Amino acid sequence: MKKTLLSFVLVFLLLIGSISSVLADDGLIGNDPDESKATQEQLSDGDGINDTDIDSMPEMPDADGQDAGDLEDDIMSDEEIIEEEIISEAVDAAGAEIVAEAVAEELSLEAKNAIDSPFDINFIHNGVTYSAFMKADKKYYLFVPNNVSLSDITLNCFGFAPQTVSAGEINKETNQIISPFAVSGDTLSVTTDKGDSYVITVMQSNVPSVEIELSGTDLETINAGSKDTKYKGNRVTVIDEYGNESVNENVTVKGRGNTTWVDSDKKPYQLSFDKKASVLGMEPAKKWILLASAFDDSLMRNQIAFETAAKLGMYGTTEYRFANLWADGEYRGLYLIGEKIEIGKNRLNLTHPQGCVFEMDTAFYGAEAYYFKAGGQMYTVKESVTEEESDIIAAEQNFKDKVNGLLNYIGSSQNISVEELSKYIDVQSFAQLYLMTDYFENA
Image (cartoon, rainbow, N blue to C red; front, top):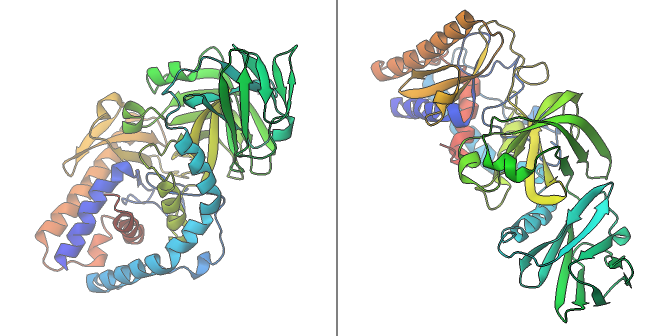
């Protein structure tokens, strides 16, 4: 029994960083169920959370009057329920069928920069130029947002003059190919005035689209710099699965993340609107995150985990939606767009002056204004209710006392009780977090 509870603690200490941890208003480690609107490293929503039967999901054990043995039995029982019932629902809610189409697009993107194209083939929609890229010798791919009618596309050809085409019509005066496509996956064979032949494949998904039009910079410049550099005055258009557009002006774009930002070509970003706005049906806010899922070939693991957390009833599970991303008309791949873990009414609604969001960070903690050590690990203060240094220092000390006290209690006690554990952690959210971490092998 002691070994099982100790494993909870070890998992907890591993999780608080890759999963953010919150010092809730009651001073316990974990999310205050009445005041939080975020989970730990963002495990949330796909094609829209299906909220049906949330009330019928298994409730986590009540700490009152329950010993550790009962808690372990209930956790193991709920883990079986996760496997048998909740995961299948979460996969459905994540929109697996729709995502499979977008995953195919993403996999086609892998060799995007492998060959430099001798030509430029593009079309213009709403003032944005969308260019095809050359994936392999003489094979082009053109990725199109979901609000564009494929039959209305007119291709502009630069560097060659089309002589014959397998579909559409050639306007030789303007060097254009008119209406060459009807449906996603259509291929266009083109012969040029240079005697070469090329194939252009059009790709379009019903997954929502996010278009970023940058002002005074480009994505390569952003990617090559610091993730903390802010680029202001940009335009972001969000297009839902039905083709409805939402345009946001004066958007600030910056990088985010640690390992993904440093080690991946496909990078995550943060968007900051100048006023609160809803994105794809999520609660209005100013800050939104674009997760790259760069190290997940399926591009679905985060979203399925988010959906599972919601089905399990984890308080404050953040929401995300799948979206294809374009920057200045260049397709950048399939992303998740969703809620940032931050203190706010529609996010993490902390009100106590010592309310803080902490993150375990063993590599980049030195770049933060506040960092400290607890339980042998380094932590940073990501956000705080107030900017008063005395409140932040007090919150840090409270956090350290809880973590160190928990380890000391587990290490020295022969008879461990839920009542005593409750002095250091919120037992219910801790047990839910343990289940999620164990099932998804996230430690």
